[in-house]
Image (cartoon, rainbow, N blue to C red; front, side, top):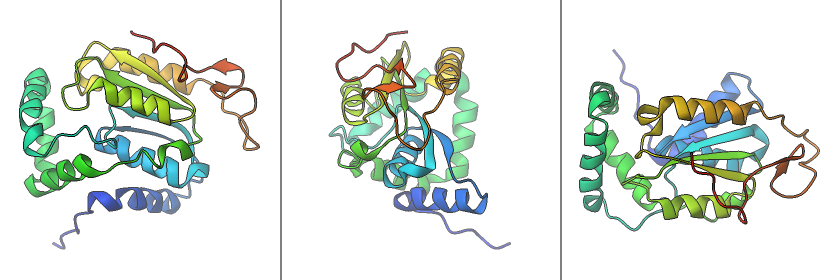
Length: 209
């Protein structure tokens, strides 16, 4: 059988846009975790007209100063935290393959979205684990500062909230997606508001749940 070419991490947002075009989807809500969050945020910044809402769960995209070897211990600790879901994690890792995983880790170690993040127009929900060993909380605060219409939700867990706190993550995402979107003419109201509903902005204390 013909082997598909592995898509380099740097090309994933372009690949995602091509998939949206192939599916004839002009504007979508996007959600992503870690590297997936980086890809979703990158597309929302480069093609803001295509993204209605954005949910980012512990996204990569702001380097935390660790080298690839320096991520090894936090990664092992994170895998231990996920030991009850290890079969699922290992299955996903096998599909990606060792070289794909290594390229992805190397990419998230150096890719810096800080210059692009202010271009995001979509209302954005940031979900972060308070005990995240791979992407520490100061990175979450930087995301909230740089993304114009963002609010931050903290959960008592590590790097993979959807496995560690699935009910809480589902509740927060569902509540966020139930909010009405502004029309295409602009957001209206003050910065940090969507249809009069206040989003926690840079001057607010992030809610802790």
